[in-house]
Image: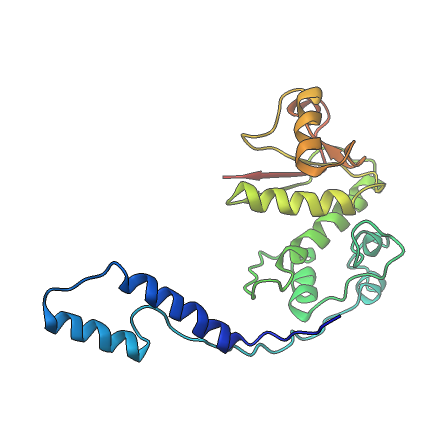
Length: 227
């Protein structure tokens, strides 16, 4: 087996050279002044492309553990088992929370309106999903049924992604989750065909309500939609 390394600078030079050749193959200038200016800017590397740029990001600060939040009475005792590193493996360890996540959880549970701004991939969804699931578990213990949270997303793709993650995590929890958008089929049979094509799974998790009929008949604990 041969190990090969990737040199991003060399790769950029290769792509930039190919792009420059492509552009020069059809861009013809009759005015020599314009042609000279274009050629100079291309040589300077400021016209067709920029970079490369390297951005160094510091590690996010560690936050409270699930054990600490549960011990302090902030989260339901079973919350951590639904937020494991592997959503489909309850035996895997709980995710490690960043400080902005545990701070947001404390803020939300205390009843405050909370805004979280953080980088891509920093787990912003967990900031609200964890306290939402915790509250749903508490209300389930008290026998309260119906919708407890509505999660609104700007795009179907993002709504579907979050739904897929949470539905897998909530399998076996007793909680129900559903996504209600313009794409949600009316009947269960219609929904099952769409579901199998989209997920490659034979049947939904027991946490899922996949049709409008099911959602209207037995409203889920968590409803995901878009605007």
